[in-house]
Length: 226
Image (cartoon, rainbow, N blue to C red; front, side, top):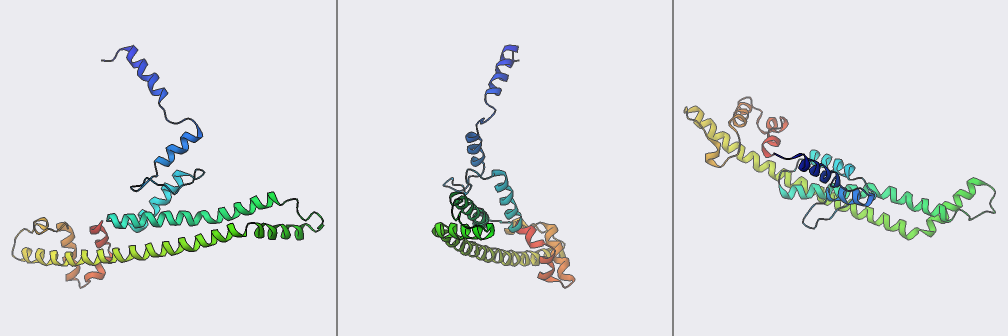
């Protein structure tokens, strides 16, 4: 049993280890929570919200429901690419904001405020044209990267669904045969991961003439593959 002195010491120690106190420490701590991959890299900038990124990533995982490591890597890539795409408009606005501040004293001789504002905007663009063009190029590259990852994910998931249904059909054949002969069918004995309930559901779908379309519409393949 702990003595009062030991309990007091434990309380003092816990108060000394409640986590990072400074903004820098908090930022490092939040980034640690979203590091991924073997390299431990993160797509977050120091000013970005780690919780918002986590919610963004969870939304992608829920939407695409990856079931293999390869699919999970592609979904991670999709989420990261989309996060970077969403950053581009704010970066563009930031460039214009910096430019307006730096060039605010230009065109003082122009009395019309609307004309002067338009000239400053044009001057900002000409001054930061290279940076703005680089953003546009980066956006194009990210869009291509996203489309490529999405196409590959779609290919893999369709292939997985096809293979799953092929195995499901074979397992259902064996299940129906054993059921007709009053034998207990054990899917695991034949290397299948389906449950008897799933096989019974597919067998009933066959009897009603719905086949693959019914199984897919009911979400059966998704539940099995997951």
